[in-house]
Amino acid sequence: MKLARCMSRLGTETAFEVLVRARALEAQGRDVIHLEIGEPDFDTPPNIVEAAIEALRRGETHYTPSAGILPLREAIAEEVGRMRGITVSPDEVVVTPGAKPIIFFSLLALAEPGDEVIYPNPGFPIYESMINFVGATPVPIPLREDREFRFDVDELRSKVTPRTRLIILNSPHNPTGGVLSREDLEAIAELTLQHDLMVLSDEVYSRILYEGEHVSIASFPGLKERTIILDGFSKTYAMTGWRLGYGVMRTELAACINRLMVNSASCTAAFTQWAGVEALRGPQEAPARMVAAFRERRDLVVAGLRSIPGVTCVEPKGAFYVFPNISATGMPSKLFADSLLEKAGVAALAGTSFGAYGEGYVRLSYANSLENLRRAVERIGEFISGLGRDR
Image (cartoon, rainbow, N blue to C red):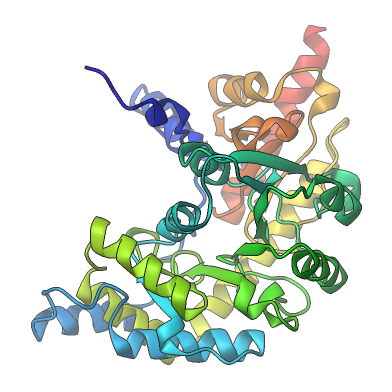
């Protein structure tokens, strides 16, 4: 069978591949601690579940408008506007089955062969995958440990060319937990205006922040019209399996993204959207408790990793990942992660799963119990100590 050439340019996420290998080991009787999958280990709050059940009972099982039901778009517009200090209309909101389609649709709508797209590396692997898929040129900006995995704005400036079409931001950041400062964003905003660029701002971890308040580039003067805000319900409300995300953008672009929805998914499931209304309009104690638990876990994992000789670890300011530097072991990231799973029973992701500049690092998700995290850190320490003895 002959496939279209673009399929050879399409990447994947290795987290699910590692999960399969980890489950195979468990089937053999091995004890594995799962730190590979990027999803909260909490249940969806009961009020959200009940809202979905009630929606099903009253017959919300049919097509909806492709951009999403009006009550949800109104709730999203209100929440996004309140949190970011901007005015948002429901016509500027497109609801999608998960947040990933906003990445896909935005690149389809804005980038084509000959265009360049700047994106963070290490970073969410779907950015680079989709840039390649649409035929544009990916231009990585390295995120470095000595800058707490924030953009070097001078380096970013040097990467902008007349062919640059779009800059992708992600703050709080996957896989490092880094957060762009207000000063970083102000400089990027100035650069965006100077060069007439668009920004795709991935803010899916905006509510999982451990200090200060979330700052969106869309809140800077002149940037709302140039920014696509990508957000969703998976992380904040522990709704990964519900597949509910959204984009906020200028109305003419929203109309284009909506046409892509018509041509692909038709619409997002009706009952899921009503659950989203309840998530935004209902009590917010559950997300707050979840973030408090993540903060406690972060502190435990960072302290434990820093106690291991040869390992350095920047304290993440958001999301629920740590990105420790294991280069002192002398092992490539993938070999380290594979061996850690096989020999120590800890499932982690190689830093290179997130791009070439992730070499020398691994990503650990601390969306697990304190007890399991303690055990995982002990196993990592013993594993690295064993490497030293082997040499």
